[in-house]
Image 1: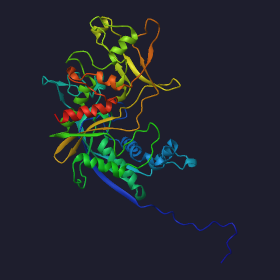
Image 2 (image 1 turned 180 degrees about the vertical axis):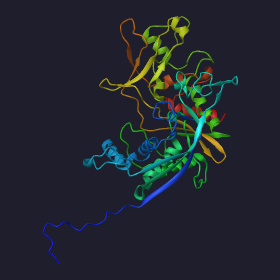
Image 3 (image 1 turned 90 degrees about the horizontal axis):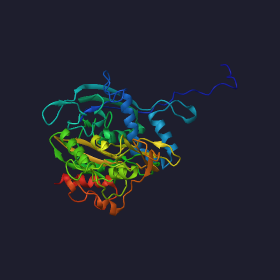
Image 4 (image 1 turned 90 degrees about the vertical axis):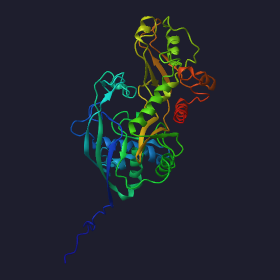
Length: 427
């Protein structure tokens, strides 16, 4: 035998391959799919449900359930996420392709969601006479795609050591999430149809048990939306189908957010009157009303566009789109803040229930500004405003048709909505 050279390489051994787990889950959508394709508000004609979209949703819900492992460190959270779900290759950061493989196969490409108004006439989903117009308002001016009866199977493969991470993301996505656009308002709500068994107990108890099982005990970085075991949740009474449960939820939200003195009367919320006072423009038909001058509905998400009726604009009310936006301390505009409020139906056995939940870790921007639809007489085009109500200011807000108080002493308007929802659910 020849003597090996002194610089001979070490013995080479085959790299161990971790045990892999493959799951196949069948899903159907309980509510219509709004968009979901590569073009905004359009469904993909070939691949109605895309694997990249599913991966994106799972990444979000992984952060929402497991992001507390980073103990408040945003860079650590990003590194952990990249190692699990993938990132552009960077040897220095030990990131690269995802360890999790996702494959989607459609079982039903769906059909156009047919909507009829109160007269029995077919209308678009976003049409002002559509019963879904409040949640489909982006389609009032455009022709997007809304599909019903969509189904697909998801095949997901991952390392056995990552099972807890993946199971948490899947459970949260199935319970709180969906597919496509406007999932926080109930579009694209999922049901795992071949779930092997249904645990005992009522639905709210099982949701709480899932939170306790899948949400880590830790600290999330600032402004990272997440779930907690004690987060505010309301589960409604049962309905015969998911659309009825969904409509109950968003109709109550509409009733709450648009509380008026009477059916076609003035808003009981302070923002319209605040805009009149700030701009100095006012229709003769609208006499001054007491107001806090606050913009509390910012808590439901940004931007918010306040547009006065055309007849009132002609009579002197502020013109154009008056837009509520966020602003950072250094003056950068934040034109988007997703709502922390989740509304969606859940199927359980042969019934459907409405679920309302509030994501934690969602904070308003440093400042709020109202950008006017017209330049004012003194040259201003915006003003800084406030969203935070005092208990006394909250008590002043009247409910729909001026019946009782809308908020009571509750200054958190999102929490006040959940109370409003529970009260109507038990009525």
